[in-house]
Length: 113
Length: 113
Image (cartoon, each protein chain N blue to C red):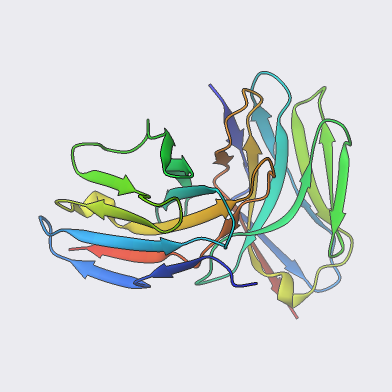
């Protein structure tokens, strides 16, 4: 069945460090892939999405790269700030046509000043 | 444009009690989703609607959970007899037509004692 895996549960950084979060997925067909960010006490917010038609996306200084060959979908940011501290979820709308999202387990990013 | 609203924001129950959660999606959004997010996990789909029709409720524990969207706008999710394992945040999201982006509400945090 469809699945999304985030192996990094926690990432601790200092301001201006480089952030890299890895995500792998499994599905048939052509998925749409998303990164959502969730701040404490709020619902997830879309950060960016990528389809198989374009293998990169960017928003708010974050960039996501989709590699169909390795079924991976990475999120990176060159220079993180304290306000980037949040939980980041990789999510997928599977290639079968269903509209529901399948989320990874999340990566908690803590950035110290 | 108002976002997705949910109420109540918090609920505390004893096992065996019933509870209802209410969701008002973004105006004009035809698709509405309910997700369950256990602590330190990603959201997991319970059920979703297009207009008033249930599209997928395969993950909804049908013996105790029910969801309705009678006029294709607001929705109610009900737990008939809560268990400690139902402790989680219940998130509502909505989307429009063929758009992939789902917009999430702030969630209802449920604690079952």
